[in-house]
Amino acid sequence: MRKSKIITEVASSKSNRVEVPEAKAAMDRFKTEVASELGVNLKEGYNGDLTSKEAGSIGGEMVRRMIKKQEEQMK
Image 1: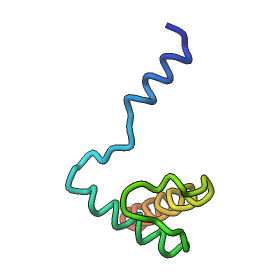
Image 2: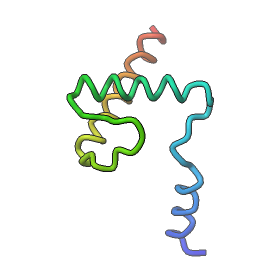
Image 3: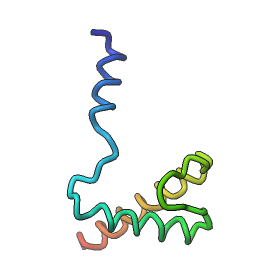
Image 4: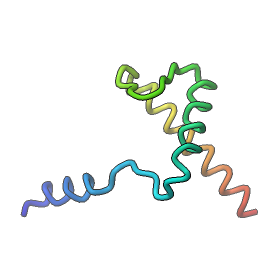
């Protein structure tokens, strides 16, 4: 098996799933809150019309906030 195929298979086996099913609703609310604060129009369901910049800004801000919260808890 070629190296690129192995990498692709590993990447595809790690989907964007929430490990704790009960957390999905909370993550969806968090994403909606962040999108709203950034001025990105996020709809229920499919959001394929978002630009990469818009989608990336939502995900990036979510990660920044989660890291900040974790750092505060570690103090």
